[in-house]
Amino acid sequence: MMTSDGIGALLRGIRERAGRSREQQAQRLEDAQGGRFFDPENLKRWETERRLPTPIFHEPIARAYGVTVAEVRRAIAVSRQFRRQSKGELSDVDRRRLLGAAAVAVGAAGLPGIAQAREAIDSALIAAPDGDLAYLESAYERHRGGYRGRAPEAVLTEMRADLDLLRHSLARPHSTRARTDLVRTAAGLAGLVAIIQHDRGDQPDAARWFSTAERAARESGDRRVTAWVLARHAMVGANYGAPRQAALLAAKARRAAGSAPTAAAALSAAVSARALAAAGDRAGAMTAIEDVRTLVDRLDGEDTADTWTGYPAQKHYVHLSQAYTLLGDTRSAYAAQDQALALTRGASVMTRALLTLDRAACLHADGDPSSAAATAAGVLEQLPTAYRTGLVGSRATALHRRLTGRPQDQLGQLLADG
Image (tube, rainbow, N blue to C red; front, side, top):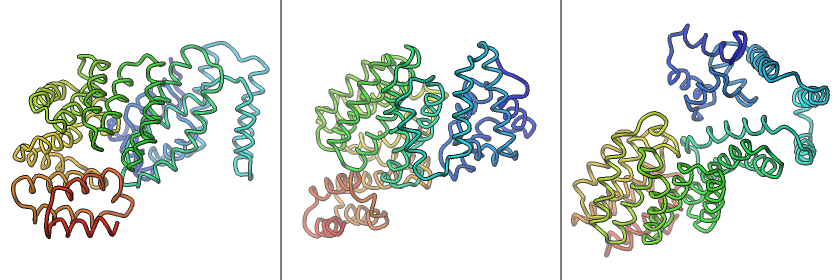
């Protein structure tokens, strides 16, 4: 249910008059945010008013749609008022609370220490959680878009305030439905932090965050989220030398995902293939590869989104590259690397580096250690310092151990220099 003067009608009307699809409009919103990922599904929720844009999006919306911020806020206010009238009028106490909160947000946001004061007061109140829940859901959508050319530390810094808000929100009482939504979002955000810590090479902290994410996912009862968390957790062992543990976690993820064609199911099968290949189970790895190929052919919609929770074709070929490299099937690995690189955006610094290191490992397997060392050294030399440690550094170190003589010295010198 929505009103003709609200935000949904405004956004949809402008987009349709311009002849743009939601995906095209989402790209404009992404550009308005300085390249930060924006999910078209979020736009759909705004246009149907299942969700209302939170304040962080007001200015990007104004830029992307060619309207003023005041027009955006006025339309949101109309939609919010319509919602209230549809559900029954607010009590005088609730109305005063809303008006007081609005006055603080508009008139005092820039005062020193005011944010800390608001957080302290807010955490002591038992208030309607809808605003924080909606914001946290939108924050999760923003963060799951990946690095987009940013260093892992920069993404963690950006997430800090949202994690603090999540902590406060979890400490408050909620209705059963709101609690379920909140813990599902908590599972997603905790999983994203774990992914970043994994990429940085902080395995203990990644494991702790994954455990937190799994606990939240299981409380939510969402099997897809649970399977995604378990599959991502399995990647820690797959990438850092514990393939048997990774295979066990991947198997748990596959059981949680079930047989439905979802991004979580495809990821679980792909990680299983990599772990089994690393553990020397060639037959098991090949079976898992066939399973993930079958699943990928049946994916569509948000399951194929280029996010940390989706399983797009590019991600599929990245996983195949590693699986075939570990199996020593260099011909299939080279083909997967070429397909992955063709689908990889220029900003995906870490992905390109990992694919190149897979290629270097294949060159070594094909009996050309000099080219292997040169290829690995070349990608490390071009990488910003922030990307040379963690997962990239671990994979380069693994190749270094297999090399001998001058090629080993060449790559070893670069690794020593950091």
